[in-house]
Length: 158
Image (tube, rainbow, N blue to C red; front, side, top):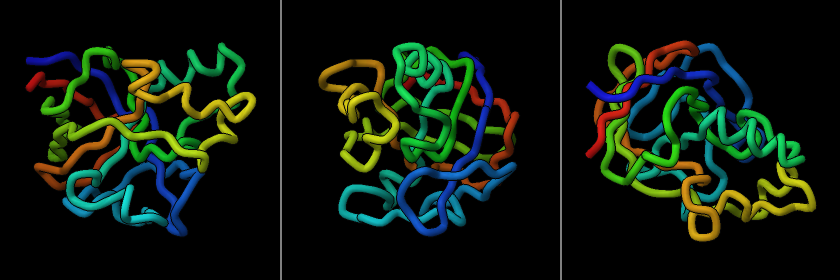
């Protein structure tokens, strides 16, 4: 059994872009979170980037640094609490609630669309290359289902 956290917030934006707005639950499919849209499919979405994730603990630490970031403001679909974010790796799996199974596929490259979440527009603060362990993550969906706020999230190393 892996380390367990929980879904703190589920975020989507039917028009695309950021911020994404909180919902109580959402269907998660191999094509992404139902009701969410990505504006630029060259760099977002698709089966290998179906779900974006970020940690509540990272958001809180960034706020403590003076950044106006909040859950969903940088475009993550699932804001997760209770996992050691620095230990998540490509190939690891996350079991969300009863049915949803995700596999981490990569790190999200930050872009200027999220600069409003950072003091002085310093969006590269969550670049994996510049600050390892601080990036948002992309995942593909191995098991579809409905995710709910409060669902358990179990980390299974790859």
